[in-house]
Length: 129
Image (cartoon, rainbow, N blue to C red):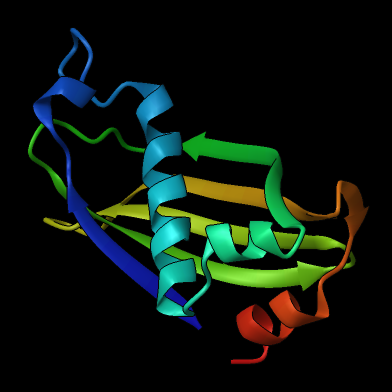
C-alpha cells in the first residue's frame, strides 16, 4: 500500500537561491510518516504509554530536482518490515509535472521499555492492514 500526503512549499522553507533548504525535506518526510501512522490510527503518545518508542535509526535522502516556493508536492510512502526495522520508502514528487524531487529511505526501530525489540501489536497494525 502506498500512502500519499499532499502539501505546499512555504516561502520561509527556501534558501537564498529560492529552492527548498535541504533540511526541510526531513520535515516533509517526517510529517508524511506521521500522517501515514494517523491513517492507521497509531498514536505515538499511546505507544509511549505502553513502553513502545519508535525511533529513526538511519535516513538516506537522494535529491533529484529541487522544489521551490509555492510548489505543490506529494510524498508517497511505502512501508516494509525487515527484521527489527521498519523501512519507510518515501518519494517526493512535484505535482505540476510529477517530477521526482527526492528518493528517501527512513529506517525506524522500536525500543520496548528502552531496549531494542519488536512489537507484535505494531506489526499487526502497520503491516497486516
